[in-house]
Image (tube, rainbow, N blue to C red; front, side):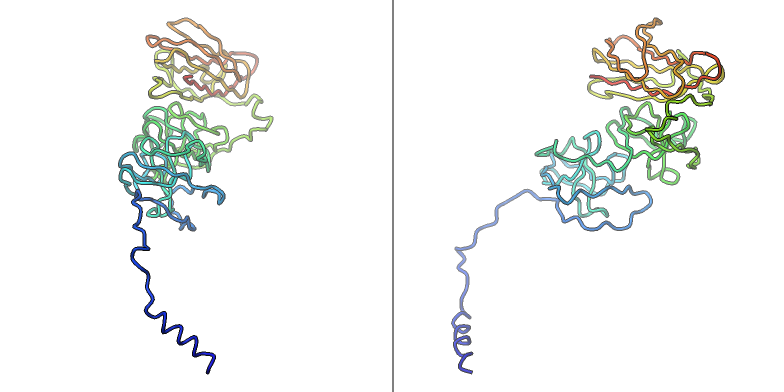
Length: 351
């Protein structure tokens, strides 16, 4: 019992102890912060797009909203808004889209604990260090484009995508002229866009899908020898011509800076030639041509009815452009012995 008396006496002495008020510091005023510890994600709804979580070693980068900004479920204005962040609020940036037009931020209010905001309205301290979130093939919209219920202009319009929107690709049509994308309000959560208005990645690896969203073909592996072998196919007639090109795009340093178009031609049967055109406000444009199949083709740039530049598959050429002129690219299958079939992709970019 004697051993407990000093302890009890000490407790009685300290019972009246307190902390002097003048030892406390007033809290420093700071910006509101949107931050949270990333926790395991809940089960996704069918229309939601899963994204890979940031690696554990990546430290979120600080940013601040320059004005009121919407937080969306994906890197596109076509995605549903998850909420609004006021101006001058600190955020934690954990990723960006392929084009660097959207930031992925920590957003505890969202089901996935993160959301997307347009980079135009959020200043980030170290933007180059933000990792690109690329869970699958994606595309960045280069010119405002309709999302349709099927691969063609005859299908109903489901909505509109704006310049710099990013979409996830889920397939393509047989010609590669239309891309299937994830689109929550479309049939089975899908929609279709014209490939000519998209800057897309990994198109060759996309599955071939029907208008009814059924898988009808698979992509050829990039390293397969079949990718360069002539295919016994006939290109379907698509009805384009010099006066009615398959795609017509306006390029500008302040707007759409590039576009990509894919199609196929064949001879002596099928659609023998394709036409696309563009105008540009810049002084030059780079044109790259990629091909698969027969090497019997003619590709050229036509200005005011005259061929001014030949194009070769696998090469990039730089042409001088003038705002007052229209530039037409013609790709034609050249007849030889037997069926000739060539699939091509043309990419036009401003410097």
